[in-house]
Image (cartoon, rainbow, N blue to C red; front, side, top):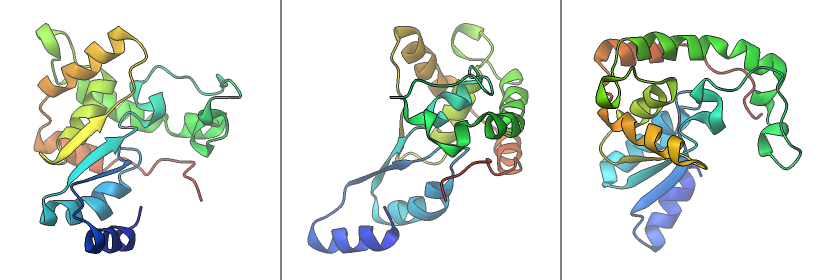
Length: 166
């Protein structure tokens, strides 16, 4: 989805929401689509807010994926790219250690990643996958994690993820 597409769609029918990939490892929607949405009162459904599972911190470089899993073909999920992107997880872990999640438990990496998406504005709604009830509960706990200006600056200072689609 490009801004040009949105402008054309808006001319035909009022756009009330846009769905786009948005996570701290693919923040392009925050830079490009989000300003357009803000000025027009349009919601943004943030798809893949935990980077197809990478930003949970539970995947390991070189682990491999089933053939039917889209990550098996995605450049960010090669062993080399996953190893290079560990620096992003290290940054999220540092931030997570400074925060509490639900019930006073330490915040998880996934909760910090989701909290970053929530911090992009009230019109942004993350849409994380949750194949298991425990993941849904963990994801919901992100609403209690309030990132500080320091946290947001730290995320902004992290390197761009290795292995983007060309």
